[in-house]
Length: 230
Image (cartoon, rainbow, N blue to C red; front, top):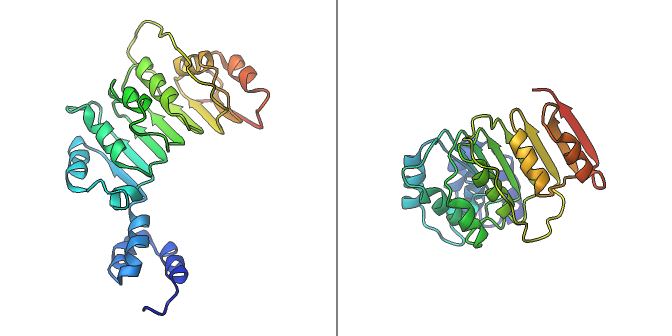
């Protein structure tokens, strides 16, 4: 086993089916880290108890399992009994690049933690579907991510009514690589227009209001446009 080049071991592990990664990690020490990196590249939680268990059981080592996670998926946690829990797990994932949330509450405190630089600098991709939060919280989180490049927001019809928020843009943001807005996200589209968000690629529900403004803002950098009907 010691005579096999590490590059060959890595190539084998890259092509192993996911259910076999646990077995691969037990073959030898040289197989373990690469196998674990693949196994924990994406983690998913569907209850607050699961998130709490991860935070309690997995050490926040700079080179341990928590550092292998690049994609965090959270679903159907409509509200948090412990609002700081979401910030805790995001803060523990030092290599996190992609955040996907489905039918999940976003605590009002989360954008503040990101603004203060406690975590989120590595997040480049965000996908939000049916988020349970106010428009102000959602837009604040989007705005606070300094390196965001790909944003997809779907189904925001049930957001609580609130006074129109006022925004303060503290830095010049470059264009996104991709912006996708689908099904009942008129208010998000209006907010992003006010925030002067632009994108190289736009995928939009044809029913979105202010679609002309979004197109106009992105006209100088736009390379791809898709108009969809919900």
